[in-house]
Length: 254
Image (tube, rainbow, N blue to C red; front, side, top):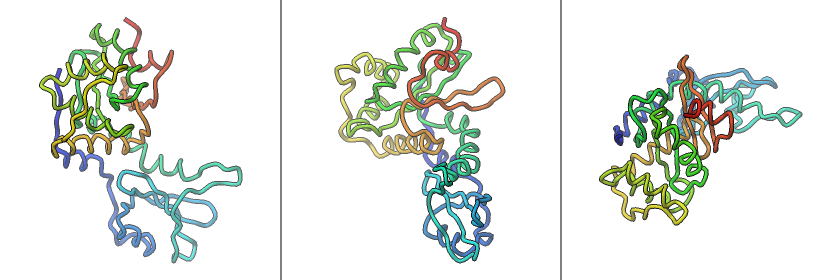
């Protein structure tokens, strides 16, 4: 069992998408790039508009170039039925490619390994120390971990409460982070681990990188659970899994 630490800059490099030369973008789109957006891909859009998938940091953004080529509209496009047309385009251009390249990004993140390295299944879990559903998933997964069937790799983030980053930092900075995490979960109902008040910059960078990775994979809340099937396809589950979904993530109950 171990905590894996990797360079923040390497993670950011892995998260980056390939970007075409700025000279290829129409002037209004290039203006958005100059303002800090990363233009990822052109896509077809209705109404005579031309769509462009972009990122503001790690957040997908849709841009629409008007037919005259002189104006750009930023935001979500809806059809007459209220369906979100931008979401599918952004998923195809940004979110899904990021998800399919997720496994090496996850391996390069800062995580706590709970369960044997030899376990037939590896499951990554984005967890906030104050998240009640993360606690429920931790408890639900105990039989698989104890039986050596699953190695849980917990990627701690600090997003839910002001104390979340301090608690995550306290766990990661402990002499034995796995033991500290288990104690935190055992004491969850009484508050868990005491937050670290002064987080060292290097540790803060690791938590920031974990948060960015979660956002970059399109995970909007915790627990965010990532698995890989036998064909190498990435599957992302958000929230506390129930019934058959829990079995799909962890395997047959031992």
